[in-house]
Length: 265
Length: 358
Image 1: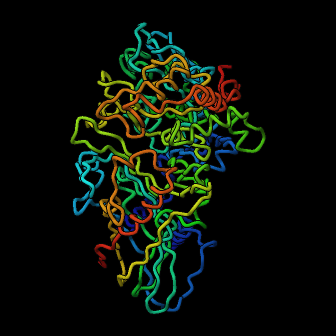
Image 2: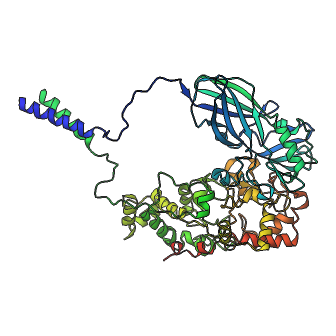
Image 3: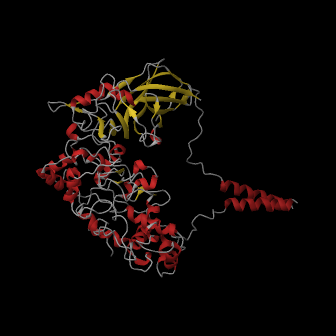
């Protein structure tokens, strides 16, 4: 009887060992010093037209009126923001959270993204770039943007679009007309290319306390009014090679973004 | 009682150590991963091809898919195969306006060319995008009356099951000799994902191996110029060598729609008349053009965008100057644009022995 018990325990013991995970290659557990808690940061992009939410459920059906009085309807809205960085108020350290994000209003999965790195909890200020700055706006190097047909023609300086806003205006008349409000590198009369990005450095103090979500709000109506009141009857399409239109867009973009709700849940 | 405890413990141990029933048995054939050859231009410019984890490419799966693609056994009366409407020499399209099914009746849309499908990253297939994934796409033609015409997939499964070769081929590709429609379309999708076209004259130009003629270069400029052709917003550019955005547009063909296209799928009238932008690769082989094959020549296509646009409520805003009928290209620009477009054709692709029935 004791012999049976003995062999049973040996057998079970061997079995357990043979079934156990082989940890030979596992990283040994090394106690680490307790440091400042780290967290990733979520971003949420919200788009509106003077307070009317614009999203994938309604952007083709909303009738919008711009500052100049044209009644318009959107068909396609895509824009690129890049170089999202948080700068610590306490230490001045800059954390590069996300290289870029292409928002497509028809695809709600592009409204949200998470930082590529974790940062210490604390108080920060946010900065970002509309489109790509000159250093990053390198023709053809971003394969996902290439596949998304986001390129900007080499004849206009190459690189990538910053904005593609297509739609029709005068939709309250019998003769709606198309507009293609596209923004990217500007080509001047001398044939030189001028970078056309906008850097945003928000004054708002942002408390990162863990599980933080920062809402970035874009008021699309600002594209048509501040400081340049946009007359679509004059500037509808083509605008990409129109230097004046490109610089006016750059000026108007400067007021489209604001920081919305910051949540720490 | 003590014996009972020991037996129970041993039983649990044996069960916990035994192999999962779903695992391949030790003597099962293990298919060999397929080495997909990605063109250099694609490696430089595009994301990796989209290969589902649930259907990795294997030598055996691709070979089986090719055999099925060319085999008339998939049709109700053994008269047609996939290749009947997707011929290699036509870049896997059909030179008929509308392909004929087993009943001799035409389908409702022109046969789509098949290549670079693993880069259709949205995975919406057919002219109206109504099938999500290449596997689900391949399910449909087999039981369409105006295509392969089977009453049900069960009939096809039974024919394949009773075939002298197929059960073994499925066993080697998928580890089971039991043939199901799911495995049939997995194999076909594997073969279709190998249909890669990336060696056109323009690809060689991109790689610095050849030059464009002045006419072809001007054609590229027309293509990329928002004030002239403005083709690139829907049809790619030198950095998007797919030469399509794989999106859906109303390109001004009709004032009203007998075929709703995307609108028939979404139920949204704002999508009426929208169809997928086809790739501009291999236009030399894929006439006639458009979702209904209405244009017999490339000249007719260019003329349409230049002066033949028809307005409608859902026409894409990228269709400029619709009030004038189009972008009004000069005769020279039209000729040059055509010359450029033909540099996107890839004779190596249509003559690739791996894609022929041999």
